[in-house]
Length: 242
Image 1 (cartoon, rainbow, N blue to C red):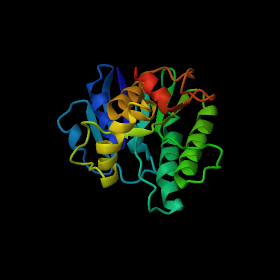
Image 2 (cartoon, rainbow, N blue to C red; image 1 turned 90 degrees about the vertical axis):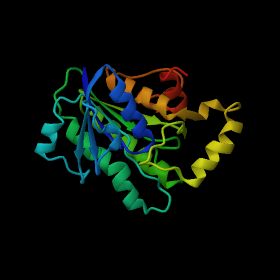
Image 3 (tube, helix red, strand yellow; image 1 turned 120 degrees about the vertical axis):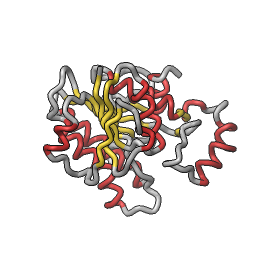
Image 4 (spheres, rainbow, N blue to C red; image 1 turned 60 degrees about the horizontal axis):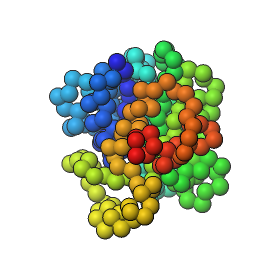
């Protein structure tokens, strides 16, 4: 039975990952780092909601509460639209790197797995024109560098494309007009022709939890980049059995 850490539990991907983790018989405890209460965790004996305001800091008392964890799924994120690059970088790169630096020292049997929910278009070369691609790619690269220097710490970068919310909208996370319009009208037209760009929140959650529960080893096959730890949408779909 595993103890995993989760961030972003009130967001689109994170809320589905929370549901998947709480329902998994292989997981005994989910420590949820959140700035505010998480209604979906109320009353569940597996859920341990920890109100955490500063995601750049992991003091000893917090690490004590997280002791015994063998994985973290980092689903916290924010849209880059309208944001200054410095502010977006702090949230998108600074926060997960601070966590990875803290969690890499946890004693584990095998490897501690850090599953980072990135996105299609992330570019680790730094050449992306869009801010989203540059910052997400830089975060991925930096996380992999941390893992390369710590044999007991493994990082997976997941790059979902069009995340279909399905039934997983909650009162805590509302749809934007663009999201409503795309999934109401655009998605039904595109799915028959290019299904590979879509991933439901349920399937993204299944793949994320499977990696968190795995051995932390290098992956191969369609949709997995040459580093063995960066997984495109086609690879996520394959891991989820699509």
